[in-house]
Amino acid sequence: MELLIRLFIAFLKIGTFSFGGGYAMLPFIQKEIVESNTWISMSEFTDIIGISQMTPGPVAINSATFVGYKVGGIIGSIIATLGVITTSFILITIINKLLSKFKESKVVKAALLGMRPVLIALIIYAFIDLAKEAYVDLKSIIITLIIVVILLSKKVHPILVIVIAAILGVFFYA
Image (tube, rainbow, N blue to C red; front, side, top):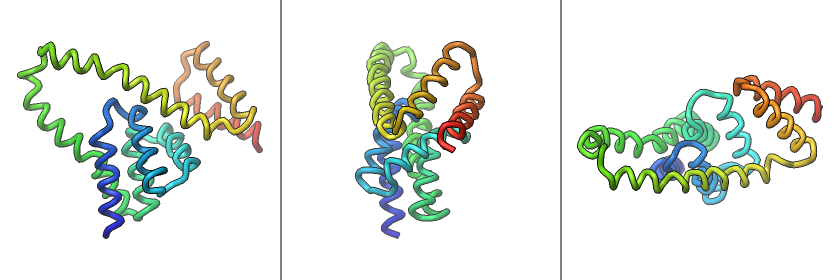
């Protein structure tokens, strides 16, 4: 029971103190589940990010579900997922009621504009942390460069990019 409470509180913190969506949440998720609670390794965290790209749903919810299941089974996955969505659910309910009153407020608009740069910084920070784990050798860098060229030269669907990367992985590592 204590573990489930810790799981709920960890993901409640992630959901409460993260702003800007999945990628901006990555540093918070990593801090809580890899560093503070050591529920998973950095390698597993990197895998979660990859799996989250292939499965429907936000990265925070996918992470909560995966880690919750690993730590506490099906009940753990439910508890962790509820933890990560609780604050958002409450805030959206409240904001929905108040937004019509303040949507034209200069202060609200200014605050939101002020938060945009920090979201980019959080995404860059998450990228650097994930890159340390993902770029293990020259082959992984070559795969990245091939994918970047494909993405910049053609408008390719993300699923196709993942499939191409998987094929390149099999080619280089099998």
